Image 1 (cartoon, rainbow, N blue to C red):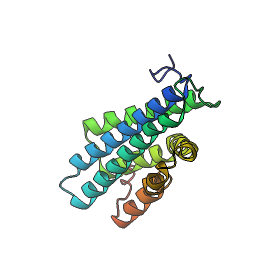
Image 2: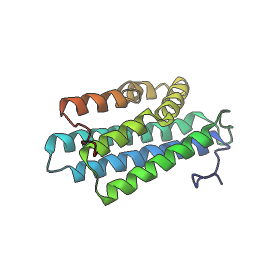
Image 3: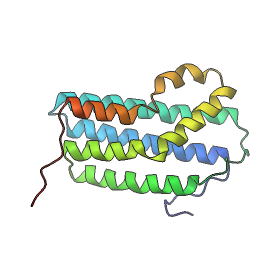
Image 4: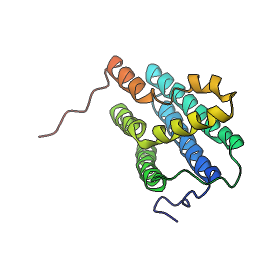
Length: 168
């Protein structure tokens, strides 16, 4: 077991399930943000939209199993370390959300997640499998895997969600 509590992915299927699970958790976190910010409808609507996109990412990653044999080895790389770090960041953000979180903290935490390797790993998997499973292509183009951080920054700017004042 690695420090992220999930076994190191030895097969492509294990790696795909781990990444899909992380995408589901991010979607659930964004759903939690939508509930927390229900009194601010524009922010809540944004988080609902992001949650839906994360669920789509999870479905796409899980669907890619169909192009790999069950025993196909995972690609070489430092996925265990990268995904373990993402799991830790996500766990910390889930705990902050459970205790109550400001709009600024939610956006800052989501920006950190979206800048993490998770999107790079997800996009790599989807693009690689897309060649073997051509029907994924239509969904991949609409999945927005590589645009979430930009979207977060734009909405944060447009809604004027500024950093809290620094205490002296």
